[in-house]
Length: 629
Image 1 (cartoon, rainbow, N blue to C red):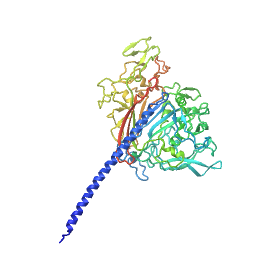
Image 2: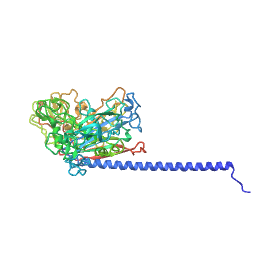
Image 3: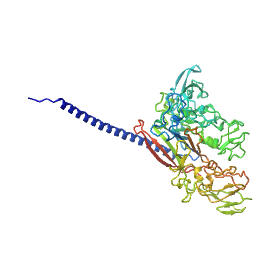
């Protein structure tokens, strides 16, 4: 007689089978997770390599006639949460993978490159070409390159005809853009819109965003004069994604000027009859000055809208705007690097209607910085929408840090002469000079002697071999203390790091200049205001970088900003004037030789955030030397 399975045996068999299935499923799940992680890691590495290659290629083309600037912004991860205005859903952390007090960085780098820079604007659909739809891509004579995070506005509409908007009897094609001109600081120069923006966060880095309909169609709208006309449009929330979804962009702007018209002429809006262009790179453009007015009429910033990548401003135009100024009386003179410092009569830094203001070279250089719009997917099929994906270089970069350094001897200058020294107790390298002796050279940057601490509390020696300049680290949640554990300091901090006033010479003391051997920072790289009551003050000592930690809002962690700006002057440490009539030529604060190298640090993620914390990537890029560096 054949014996059947008992119920217990069946249950045991089923249990064993379920266990095997669960074990097998777990194995497959783990294997799949490992595969996904491996693929994500490969994607991250591939993207990081592509970013590094592009950065190196661009920096190898640095124009010796250009300028270079770094803008660093550090925001606490819980900034939006702490600044919530009480409406809607309380914002989360900027980066959910980090601790609430962790710093998040969104730095920017701006510089200019030599050689031809191609527009990626897909030619023209404006009806100007002899072969409609076949317009060539235009090429500029040089280019401006900006690296940094993008602003994403997927809620904005696509480029199309808008109901009720008609010009010359025909529908007007428009695109909806965030009104960036309305989002400037109190001086009307710098943008306040950041990649961590949320609509229900108190200003200055939050709130609902105003928008405008911008006309981008020629031919049926009355010609170039009607390009970029704007009318009011509905506001949007403008909320930005969490940091692991931030787009990393390379904005390349071709520089070209193909006619002799005025800088603000309508013809500057169409380059070579083929491609839309922006009249100027500057919201403050002194080239528009007439009489005693230095023009300040903000243009539609179509480059930052992501709708154009050509500017009708050559590199020579930019240098001219930065180096020359029209004063309140209509005269032309040298534009100072720092307002009120190296301006002989206090009038050559105007920016609006001839009224002196913050219109020095540094101010102009800062206006080149902006987080431009870019999108993962274009909102429409029109070329003006497709362009929004052009700048994207990294699909998910949550942290971007730029730091810089100088080698020894930077700032040294041979053959530099002071006039004959009369009626002054002057010493050079410890030796008193009489009225017939003249120093012949300025010493460059040197390493401080061994055993010299860069801070009384940490005992770290500030060796140039391992020290980088930039925004220092932060030790607590409100930014009241800084640490140098990453060996990153401002150049101003480095200049006063050694015992005493370690800035080289000449040092102003009362009515005399005391010339002694330099300790760390080259005299040509540190400016000392003889009228300042505290000549050791870091802000007073430094004309190259600056740090702003005044953004505290009560108990809320502050946003910290840092600037390192390198202007057109790389070769002239002294002005050819002696304003104080003390027998010593005044030093030129605009003497800003390029950094020797830049260091980039970024956290790269895969789009699916399989690698929750991403991967930190760091690389160093040496810079070519300019004449005089």
